Length: 108
Image (tube, rainbow, N blue to C red; front, side, top):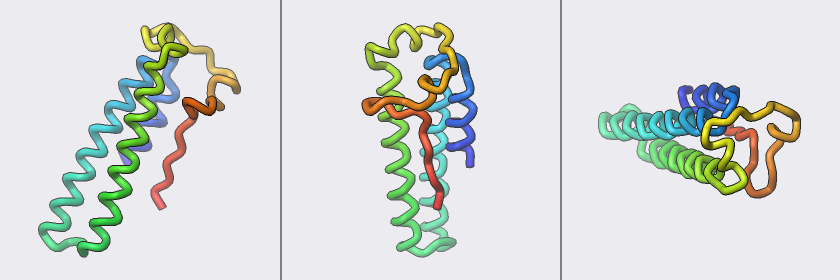
C-alpha cells in the first residue's frame, strides 16, 4: 500500500522535484515489498507460483516508477525539476505521450 500512497502524495506536490522525491520513496517501498515476498516464499507462507507472479508485478511497477522518474528529468521538465512551482491545471495533470501523468497502478 505504501507504493501507491507515495505516488499519490507526491503527485499532489507543487513541483516535479518534490514529486520525484516521493517516486524515490515508492521505488524504495517496491524493494521492501520484494524483500517481504522473498521471505514469504522462503518460509513457505506463499506458494512458488504466487511468488513468481507477485515478484514479476513488483519488478514491473518498479520499472514504471524508474521510467516516470526519468521522464521528470527530461529537458522540458528541467525548470520544474529545479523546484519551481508547477501550476495544477487539467493539462498539467493529463500528461503527454512521452511522459504520462498521472500514473495509475492497479493492484489487481
